Picture (cartoon, one colour):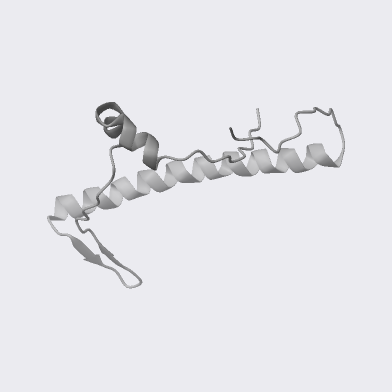
Length: 102
């Protein structure tokens, strides 16, 4: 059995900690917005490549190219369903900490 190292106590604060948490939250919100903008621009570049019927675009500063990449991934859900003993034998539990701000 895995044991958590997190102290499950709570503290209410209105000081320096609040400022730090607020800054982190704002940064995360900014990152989300930037990620959305990035996806929109990426889609636009892909559309340009498609409309020009090319896989490579060369500008004065950049070279953009689209290439097909093949990846191999383990279907853990299927393995767990079809070979539960093998799944259990090769799986391992790990503890990680997730910082959430609500």
